[in-house]
Structures are given as structure tokens and as C-alpha cells.
Amino acid sequence: MADATEIPEGYTVVKEGEAQILMQTSNTVFFNKAQVNNRDMSIAVLRTFIEKRKEEHEAMLNKRKKKPEQRTVEEDSKVSAISKEERQAEPAMPQQDRVNGEGSKEVDVAVSDGKKTKTSSWKRTGDIQPPVVLEALSASGLRALRYAREVDGIGKVIALDIEEASVEACRKNIEFNGAVASSKVQAHQADARVYMLTHPKEFDVVDIDPYGSPSIFLDSAVQSVSDGGILMCTATDMAVLCGTSAEVCYSKYGSYPVKGKYCHEMALRILLASIESHANRYKRYIVPVLSVHMDFYIRVFVRIFTSAGEIKNAPLKLSYVYQCVGCDSFHLQTLGRVVTKNNSVKHYPGFGPTVPQACADCGKKFNMGGPIWSAPIHDQDWVLSILENVKFMQERYPAYEKILAVLTTISEELDDVPLFVSLHNLCATLKCTSPSAVMFRSAVLNAGYRISGSHVNPLGLKSDAPMEVIWDIMRCWVKNHPIKPQPPDHPGSVILSKEPKIQANFARAVASLSKAQVKKVKRFLPNPEKNWGPKVRAGRQITSKHVSIYGSNVLLNGDETGGEPLEANNGEPSAKRQKADNNGAATQS
Image (cartoon, rainbow, N blue to C red; front, side, top):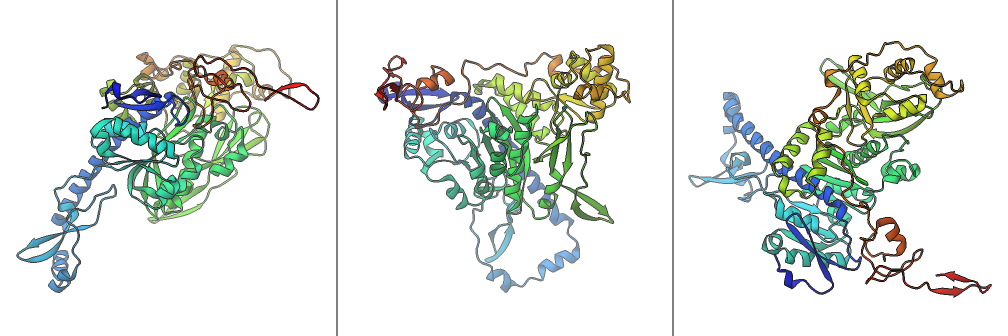
């Protein structure tokens, strides 16, 4: 690590984890302190991936070692029937063959009694090769440096950026971080899309963390990940994904969002559906291991495999969403279905529609959105492994409390229940006081259904109870807690006009509180400081307008239309430049 006295003039040192970077006082190269949560979560997943990869490789070797013992005499005779000439005619293979996530079928050349014979690669005693990582949009290179310095067992890290200033900054930071970083991290100036397309199935880990939407990178990214490798992808265009610009979302991701309290989880599922769609075009499919919403963005971690047969099941993992415009009722309809008969599996379109023209609860119409990913968005085995790793190495995570809270909440989610309802929204529809979360959860549990919280929303409740049961519970609640009369055509009035089919039991159930709630583990933390969120895109000059949005801790530099230029020494607005219009009036330029 470079000494503090070697810091060039005009730079400051930013330390995060075990890495340090040189940052210019101008906004030339993008850096956002708030993304420490993102980087810490990625490191935790990467550590778990390396462990799982080794376990899978060892299991593959053990499985292959058993095969010769299970071969019959007839099979042995077929193997011995291969002529010596054919064996010697085989081209020599390299002594060091790389074993990737899917298990290599390549062979070595073994020499015995002067004769060359093929030896299966699984018979070798060599270890699996360290994973190769591609950070497609590196900017300052902080993420790549943290991977190289903090993740044990990692191999080469390729840091890409299309901007010359970012690549130069990254190279300075690699040198500034000493020999370990210099031996593992390589910075290249290239268009990430072209680079990934020209390196198919070459990287065990691909990290995409763009400023905005990742949609333009997805097609090349799914091709560059090796079989069994992992793709880590961030999206910060939450307004688009959550339905503010639904038509833009469709053009970028191929799904139409609907507005609801579950919009951030729906954003996760839209992104997963888009990645799956891109992967399917190349006979590949995804397996999500962790999908999170944190701060102002979403982040998904998916493994990618190749199988022409498995992609036939893709429609079973996708659904359309019907959201009632009058109440909180929503319903899902899968795109496909399978029929099994005499060990034969056939795929057919899904049955539909699942809902009538008018909502059965309030009589209003439905908005339709999707398709979204309706299969599980987490692998609970991975989540528990990641959580255990984070607890064991807590001193190595600068954002330990935040990622611990998020992972704890995810570990208690119902992973097979898409989307969720909001208890406050249910009560707002009925214009009634709200039962406590414990009482509502108890009523659902006592009715024979499951229920859990959501890491996306503190008020979100995920349950496999159908919407008619949810409304029956609320009808029973309102009977015991009367409300003022509402207009007869109001959705709440229509819902309450029907008698409940079940009698809700609000007696406290044993599982009404999660283990984390019983132990009083923090699950939703406030932002650590003021103006914690997205920052100005690199290259844009900071003005008083940006300071009013992002706070005074942004880098101060220059001028931009629409705001007052700031003086870098004290952060005060410079004198307004005036110009006369045609009428002689003074206007701000």
C-alpha cells in the first residue's frame, strides 16, 4: 500500500474495507459512498460462491470416481476393443486443462509403457482453478480492488470501463494498493458489451453495476458467464421499474409494471424475467440465489447454466399479474403448464384467465402487468450460508449491520410466495383502524396458512392465503371495530357488504413473531447519514441544485444549466450571471 505522503496533489484518499482509492476533488470519475452496502453484499455472495463451487467440484469428482466401479464386464470389453492405432491417433491434449463450473470433459495425456492413452480429467488430483471475475463497469476500480484484496481464493479480476479517465484512475488505484492488487487486477478500456461478446463463457463471475438501467448489457453478459458461474446485476432506474414510466420499462425489460405497494419486489422479478429471457435465447437459464432491494436500487445474483431441455420450463417460472384498481387484490397467472403421462412430460400454454372482468372482492376492473419471474427469487441454502459467513467475518464488512439486517429478513421470507400485501393499505381500503401485525399474522396462521414479512417493505406481509381469506379476516376485524358508513359504491363498502366465509381467530399464534423479532434483531435500519442515496453522474458539474438534492457532501465543481455554479472553496453560490433579454429584463443564464 502506498504511503500517505505519496498522495498526488488534487486527490483525496477514500478507504473502504481493505482497499484505498485516490479520488479527484472534481466529479471526473464516479464514486458513491452509499454503494458500500452493495459492495459488501457482493463480497459476501462471492465468498459463498467460491465455497459452493469447491463443494460442487468435489462432489463431481467423487461421483465420477464411482463410475469405473459400477461398470459391467460387457462395458469393460467395449472399452478394451478400441484399437491401439485409434488411441495413438488421438491428438495430444494439454497437461493443464481448466475445470469450469459444469465439470470439464477434457482429457490429459497419460504415458504408460511408452504408449499414449486418454485419461479422464476427473482422475487428476489438481485443484479447481480460481474463479475469474469481470467487473464490466469499474469506474474508480474500488469494487475490483476489494474483490482482489478481501476475497480469498479469487483469481484474476478484469476491470473494464469505456471512459479513458476512469481507466487511468483505476490503474493509479491498482498501483496505489500494492503488489496484491497489481498481481490480480487488470484495467482495460473497452466497451463492456463488445468485450463480453468476444469472451463467451470465459468468466466465472460477471459484475454489472451501471448508472441507471443494465438492460443494454444483459444480452452480452449472459453469454460471457461460464456454466455454473454467477452474474451479479444492479438496476437503479427504480422509477421505470416501479411503474412511473411503464412503457419505458416494457421497452427496456420486456415487462409491463403495475403500481402497488409490492412495486420494489416486482422490480426484482421484472429484472429476473428479463435476464432469463436473454439467457433462453442461447439455450441457457438462470437460478437466482439472492435478490435484494436496498436503499435506492435492486441487486440480483443469479447462476447461469446451459441446458436445451431445461429452458422448456421457462414459461412455468413466469406469470402475468392482475392488480385490482379498487382494492389491494392481486392474482397471478402462469404462462405455461406441464402435463405428465406415462413418464412423458409435455408443455402447454397456461389456462386462463384466472380472474373475471370485474374483481370478485370489490367489483372494480383489473390492470394487467408482467410477465414477471414468479419462481423463488432466493435460494435459502445460499442465504443461510451467506448470513453465516457475514456473522463470522463481521469485522471485514464496513456495512455489517445493514447487510446483516437485510439477510436476516430475507432468511425468514416465504420464498415460494410472489409479491405481498400491505396491512395499512388493506385498512385504508376499508377505512378502518389497523390491527397489529401480530394479530393479523396470528389470524392468518390460525386459518391454516403461512405468513412472513418482506425485506422490501417493513409493512409488507407475504402469505399463501388467497385474497378472499385475507378479506374475510379483515371483515371479521371490522365487525369487532365498527367504522363510519361509506358510499355504497366505494370498494370498501362492497367488500364489507359480503359476509365472511370463515371466522377469524385473532388469538396470538406461536409463530406470529419471527425468530429475529423474538430475539429483537434489527431488520430495517435508518440511513447512516443525511442525503444517503444516488449521486450525480460522473462528468456532470455540481451546482447548488445538486447540493439541495444530494446534500453538501457532494464534490463541488463548476457550473451547469439549471443551477447556480458553486465555488469549490466554501460551497457558496457564485454571483449570478445576468444577461438582458429582448425586453431589457435581466434573466439568469
